[in-house]
Image: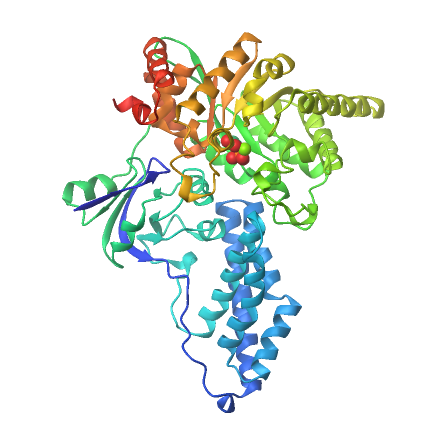
Length: 559
Ligand code: PEP
Ligand code: MG
């Protein structure tokens, strides 16, 4: 047996046989141009394109069912790349010059891929999309290898250097027993998707993962954060046993009676059912930017209204916290024409855009939200990436303006509970003043850790620093909790930290009123809350807060 450790991202285990993700397809040298029949190659290209398009359509349908309509749109974007007139022309020119179809495809895609690779953030991810489309065509044209992620053999454990969001969305939880990656942390896209799909996964295992051979038997233990090669009988049995976690459908209290809301994070409505099934008390973070991604134009007010109403009707007794549009940083939207930025995480993102260039979109989103708030259920709205009191005041003024407009128009509406995300050191330092102006705060530890520790959330090289267990981040959390409670506001946490069951007792001790996470971790966190005693939890939090180093607070519940 050989055990490697990384970061577990779902409390699930899987046993299976290793399939290494081969993302490069080797073509070898092209034949002499004199041997090429251009008409035949063009016909091969057309056949391959139409097979690829049919496959993409069926994958889009599958992804729609499994992950959600908006995420599945990535396959629609791939169809557009497949039929892009400029790309088609470049590939046909290459055939004309004497290359066979597969080499022409490789050549035609190389320029655009390089172009996107040179860009920032999500634009750079477009290069991954183009590579996907190119490899799909190459797989149809050759049998030169490359892994078809949507059709992995049943019981596969996928190993990869890293996985992009579209890679992960293609995985079929019915066939894939789990995955592990060399790179990546708890907040990487692959980790977030693994949680929505309920897949056992360990990320950030490091280079030792490369030693594990294709076909080897492997256990991925997402709870312990371990990858175990050549597992012995007891480890295999443990991994193959379906973990039975009690689903608690009612809200939970600590052992001594303090109620803590345990809610779900949502990107799309497709995740609603899972949230209800796992016993969520409500929705603590609805990331509405997913409604705007991978489409040609923004959803209008009515479409948004319907979406928010649907989320509210799934939780008639719980609260649904909707976050207003959070774009910029690593979340660009092509039709919003986001400016190129040297440093997108420190540029125009979140509320900064809603109060600036996206103010119209912000207005229509607020109209949809205020209309949705008038119906049954309890809606709350929060603003992302606030760092000054002025920003919050402007956002509240926008809500008041929209309420006045709706009143004048005689449209039924209500002003929901309002809140602010604590994601920046600025927000932490004015948390008292923010809390005095709203009903609640919600801590986004993914961004808070990145800005407090000056460690980008998407840079694997600083993943150790981007850890909310560092005392600076813990102290920022404690300060925010104190500020909220001193101002009669409730305070939740919706960053990935909230969904780590190993940290539940610590978070109870830090005084959070609500924890919001991917649905799959809800049962474990509810169990953790029920087992906690507030005094013991507070003592644990005190110890962690007073510790000068992260090491002393790592996995405090195990100590
Ligand atoms: C966060 O920053 O912790 C958060 C919940 O927001 P997002 O991950 O969507 O940026
Ligand atoms: Mg954030």
